Every structure is written in structure tokens, then in C-alpha cells.
Image 1 (cartoon, helix red, strand yellow):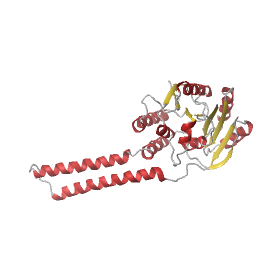
Image 2: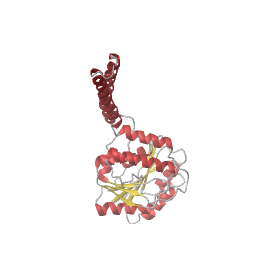
Image 3: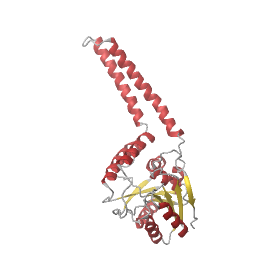
Image 4: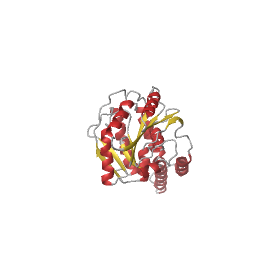
Length: 301
């Protein structure tokens, strides 16, 4: 059995070397490979990762031409894995590599397709914690995610699910949404979570808002359906006003009724058109998901 470990790297020059070394120490006795993906990092992560790939036969390295985003870097890494299971782990060392074995044991013992980690005490920055809570609430509603399941970035995915995720070629991949499109056979396991030792979190309010909007508009037709529902409500309200006038309770002008009814029909029409446009957008957008600048691929045994 081969275990793949995908690590998206952004401003991780100070921590990635120690993480890779610790992974080799932790995964002794297991056939594994490590795939590093440099997501256009402005520091010297590319040089550090290149050196690691040259030093360790089990480490492959891919460098993207610019910063495409964490999920794009992850799906790039997934496209280059060969393992029966793949673990996704951040480059900041907040998830101890030793906890990978907990995810693997849980997947094998319970025959799960995906295993998420969760923490008793999260050491993330408060901005990321708040953003994670909002995203979890939204994904519970949109994707039918169990309420007690925390969508952490540290997770393990079975090969068959990875294969299906990689079929998505859109420009804004959201890994967790793609997972729940494929399977509901998902579990969780408690792991340790450490405070960041090097650098600062790259998560900002702007990035979390962008993620929220990407999920809402990229994986859901909810906004369009809200517009459609609003149009129907306005149309119903217009007919109520018309009925009130016909019964002689209140005298509204004919212009008022015409504006309300025509306006409602326009909103409904926009909503219906939006349904088709949104669906077409979700399937036809050909913006690049990622562009590879260079890569050094090793072949794990």
C-alpha cells in the first residue's frame, strides 16, 4: 500500500524542510511519497523545495507560475499522486505528522472514503476560526455535511475519490465540495493541533470572504433561487393589492399595479435565465485551474 502526502507550500521556506524530515521519520515502515506544490510563494520556498526533491527520492516537487490559491495547489498535487490513500497537510507544522497514522488507521478500520481531522483546541488565528465556522455552517446547508463534521484542511482521501476530484477542471476548486459530490462515506478523528512556530498565517478576511463567495456562487444555485423566490413573492403581493382594490378597500392607481406586475415578471424571468446561465457557467468555464512552471517528479517504491 502506497500513502501519498500532498503539501501546498506558500511562504513555507522556514518550515517545510523540518516537516519533510519529520514525515520521513514518522512514516518509516510505510511505502509513501510526498508531493510538494509551491503556490507562487514570494519567499525562497521554490529553492528549498527543489533541494528537498533532490535530496529525498520519495519527494516530488511542482512549482506553479503564480499564486493560484491553496485549493488549486492541492488539486494540482492530487493530480500527481499514486497512493491508495492521500493525506493533505499544511506546510505550517500545526498538524504533527505523527497524527497522519490516526487518519490512516481510522480509514482502514471503518472502511471510510474520507477522514477529516478535528481539534479539541484549535490554534489558528481568530480570523481563520471565525471564517471556518461560517464556511462549515454554509456547507452543512448546501452539501448535506453532518453538523458535527469539521471541514479541516488536514484530511485523508481514498484513491477512488481522489480520481473523481481530479476530473473537475474548473478554475475555482473547493476540495470539500468536490468530496461531498462524490461520497458521503466520511468520518472524523481527533488529532492534536499545535500553535504556529514559524511565520504568520496567510489567511486574511479578504481571502475568507473570497472563499465564501466562491462556494456560494461556484457550487450552488442558491443566489439565483433567492432571486426567483423574491420575484414570485412580489408577483403574489401585486395580485393581493389588486384584489384589495377590486374589493374596494383601498384605491391604488392602475400604474402602480402595472409596475408591480411587470417588475415581478421581470425578476422571475431574470431568475429563470440565471438558472440556465449559472449551470452553464459551472460546467463551461475554461479559466486555467493552475499552470505548472517546473516540476521534479520522483517515483516512490
